[in-house]
Image (tube, rainbow, N blue to C red; front, side, top):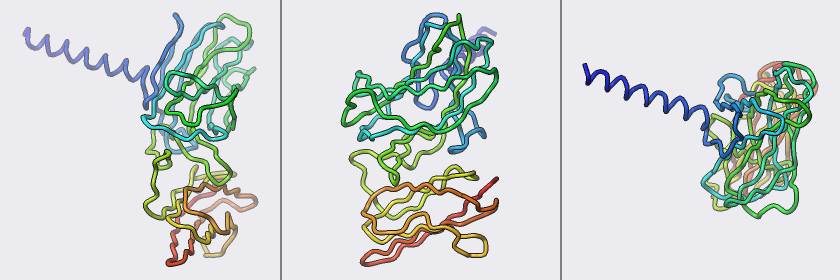
Length: 291
């Protein structure tokens, strides 16, 4: 009987530890600091993302002068891009309409923070979800490389407290229009992570994201060697309906954005063709426009 009680007690502590760990540490993000009285949770939510198949939810309940900060160490160095691209959805659902939820990303270089320009969406109505992509630069001169990110959440404005939830779907490193590197697609396997030591081993065409999509989607691919690149979209009859990009490109990782425009809903195919000096590479994948 004592042995059974001990086993039950041990199981309770294991389950409790796992539960609490999941509350404050998810997908490598963990709470670095928070003010007294702040209530938080962080979790991966399936079937809610429009970038990938998962979102990461950050919930906060805190006072007007309180803050909470999460951090994530990627375990490798990334070359700092000119801009960051953040895909998110945000909802403020407390009864305090006078304070707007704010979020602040910063680069981590060792223990030093380099703030990305503040991105804030103010909400004046209850249970009103806002969603979209934000692209932002930096305050001051950022480091050449970074290895982690910090995320600070707080309320801006008068009021005693507030409650809100933010879903982050994707963080991207925006180098130029043809090179947006995914660094964190929450809960999904990220195939787009690149660092300064990365070596391309073969040609590759990735699945577009989001998919299904309306009105735009991203298509990324890698070139083993330089060549003439053609990326076209076809309908189910095999007719070319759009040219995403066409021209000479060097070896490297690229990401192009495709706008559906006036194309109707349906199944389409996108084909990458690369003609180099010694070979021709071709690959086709399917995507869905849903309007």
